[in-house]
Amino acid sequence: MDTLYLQGIGVSEGVRIAPAFIHRRKEAGGAPAPAELPGGPEAIRAELSRLGEAKRRCALQLEELAAKAAETLGEDQAGIVTGQRRLLDDPAFYPKMEAWVQEKRVPAEQAVAGIVEQVAGVFEAMSSDYMKERAADIRDIGGRLLNALAAKEDRGLSAITERVILVADDLAPSDTIQLDPERVVGLITRAGGATSHTAILARSLGIAAVVGAGSAIDGIADGDLIAVDGAAGRCIVRPSEAEAEQSRLRMEEGERERAALARYAARPAVTADGTRVELAANIGTAAEAKAAAAQGAGGVGLFRTEFLFMNAPAMPGEEEQFRAYREAAAAMDGRPVIIRTMDIGGDKALPYLDLPREDNPFLGYRAIRIGLGRQDLLKVQLRAVLRASAFGNVKVMFPMISGLQEWREAKGVLEETKEELRRSGAAFDERIEAGIMVEVPSAAVMAGAFAREVDFFSIGTNDLVQYTLAVDRMNDKVAYLYDYFHPAVLQLIRQVIEASHRAGKWTGMCGGMAGDPLAAPLLLGLGLDEWSMEAGRLGVIKKELSALDREACRSLADSVLTLDTPHAVRQAIEEFRRAIGHSL
Image (cartoon, rainbow, N blue to C red; front, top):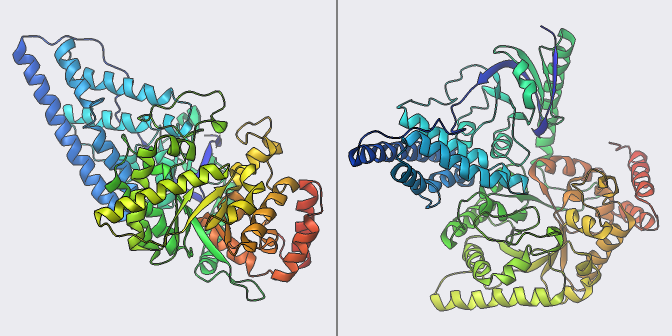
């Protein structure tokens, strides 16, 4: 058969080559043809009993999977499955199945399929890609309930015994958690996106993954040799001998490069002239804090707590949040953990939080604006953060602050929460540092005034660039204008750093720019105090810093800040790196 080339979305880096294993799983997709239960009330009671037993079996399966995930991946990744388990008790889910059986007199299978499609449809209609992809989680539960009703044992994927590339329409979280990365070395799915639970878990497991490959996967047969490039999102099915050999060489080269970078990651971040640099990790779950610590992070520069909310079927309570924050603090063992209050809104909606539909959501009711508008929710989170501060070096950070009044109101809520904890006798760090994200240009312009009141700044370049340049980075037609090397953005970054230093405070950066090796000489020269990035970038940046001299980088920054185009800035940095023999 001819070679087949597939293009999807690369969500987990790495090149792998192995035979295909085709996986098909029964799901609750599409309601069966209408059928009315025969008999009277006894038939209804019998069907409800069947449904109840299926729910019990499904709950036990999910609890076992959650325990396995907690052991192998950490409590937060297990939370993906425990969230499904909680959904079984959600009044908007399982009780509606019972109601269908009673009111429509239909078999349990039809009730399960109908309600699953209703609930999944609600998620699929949302504007956020992340929330749309939660529909797969709903259908996973539906498939399990149908299997239980049919008394069918779902052996899952744990029985795979050889190295394979897994090919599937989609993978449910409970499927992905069972994967052994020593055997399932890569995966390709028809559906899914970069924020799907499949993608998140694949990255955690270190499995090269391409999702959203579409109908092209229908051309793959069991046993076909496949080369997967998880970074480029490219797959070669039935490669030629030359292509297969090239993929094997790339796989081996990637392993060597990862080993080399792992050695850098284990070292302190030190420049060629002996300057120590603080490097931290951005995380979305407490489990990622453990992984980041293992990869050499000097702390957590950004804990994106919204993922704790977005992975749950209902608003997480104080205890659930406290456990997650405490786990992250414990994982870092005294190193700083900066917890950002929930950054909800924009493209991150919560189905259980009734937010208004907006024409310009990124300029609307989001982040700290929701926190101050719903102080009951903010206080619950701050109580959890403060209590966790008794177990480690925890700091709190407020997102999308645009003016001093917002900061003062947020700080006021923090102080009120501290007083409530004092009265209840709960332990917390009385000296906990509180800072702000600098992602709105007005905050950067007012950095001098903020620096007199906040304990620290953290520059979020992703939004700062978007707001400064009026560019929607997700819009293909204007994305070319999105560039953190734009002179206007650089001027704002320098202004924030200098304002913090004049006040004896410090500035970090947790946007994508911090993990870009091309930006490293410039950021070092500007005097950035703390750099936070995806944990996988730590080795890359440590290697880059090891070749840099701080004084030379200061001269570079002074000259770069006189330039007037992003192209000129990039060219100047590239020339600097070539001059020191450290080109990309």
